[in-house]
Length: 282
Image (cartoon, one colour):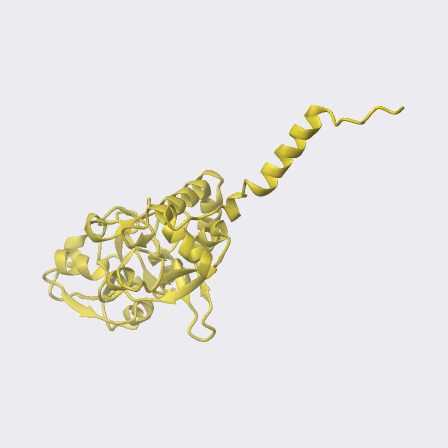
């Protein structure tokens, strides 16, 4: 008589482990996001889209082509990497510098976070949340190439006979009003139009930043940025969002840290012309 067959004990343990792996665990892309533990991430995953606010007027960080509606730029690609980590696609929402803070804090929210040339400041952190900085920045000027020798310091710009143009609502306007009280201040609503207006003589200088100025200098020989190596301020650019989204902020900071560690940020800087600049026009 044949003896009854009994599975070895270790076979049952193996089957049990396989079932646990199949049903009890999830990959990082499909991790469960309970509303209690991960409310912001859960909202984004349920929606299937990461809504990203950006001005679209600050090359080479954020740019929305007015003809095609296509978004591009260094910060745009950073946002797309964050969306990929969440397993969703990034959808960009147009905001503006004057309305940025209100849009970030709107209820219901206009978007999940904002990105694109937004400087990390204590003032913003009082009412909103900001990520770790991922790109160094600082205030400088654009001027006509023929005037490069005329502007060698902030004092050279802060004169009654100097017309300084800025875009409204952002830190460029704040800086100009706080540091150039004697200059003639001109506010123009469209940031991307100001470099050409300076080149054409409608203003003598534009308050801008060290990540934006070289993009225009390389593309327009009429322009110069004589003080690139001596920025008036020093800061970093980060991601801006409403307070109370700790789970989303932790994920954003984690993605930024990974991109810095594996060389992705460095590669994107090279791609978008954000390598160190040593002199105007270089």
